[in-house]
Image: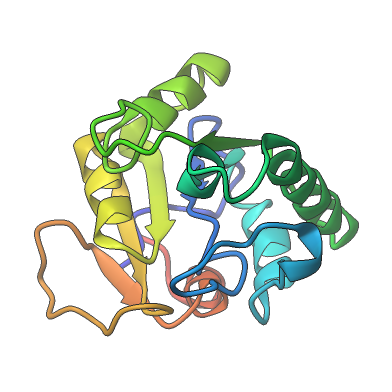
Length: 191
């Protein structure tokens, strides 16, 4: 069931939070995406974000990037990936309003998901955000817990882990890909 009524205009507080690796791009399991040349969009993601850009007033990426903190990649390389990703999304008719990256090594860092720091930063930068009218899409339990800690609707993608049995405390919906979820928003009757 879709909690968002996308008919009849845009709600200014409607916000989409996206994880990056495994949601937007193909994840390098057991490793890191360390440069733009290693970055590969998941099938259908560019068209999906274009569609979602008409549904959500604000779209932000919240991504844990411990590889920077560990010295495996540079902050400049991470910024280069974000700039190129945003440009490709824009060229395909979509938009990402901002990317938030946590480079901390420690799980205790307030910005590292499932901790809520990146969500609170987004709210500071985009005061129109209402977490109760927002969706978190991710492919790990830390993404889902991050969303629930802020009161969001959560969508789990099975790009890395198998599907969970629903109902689940942290997961409201689950799909095989961002494309599969975006298609349901456009195709299903709204509530």
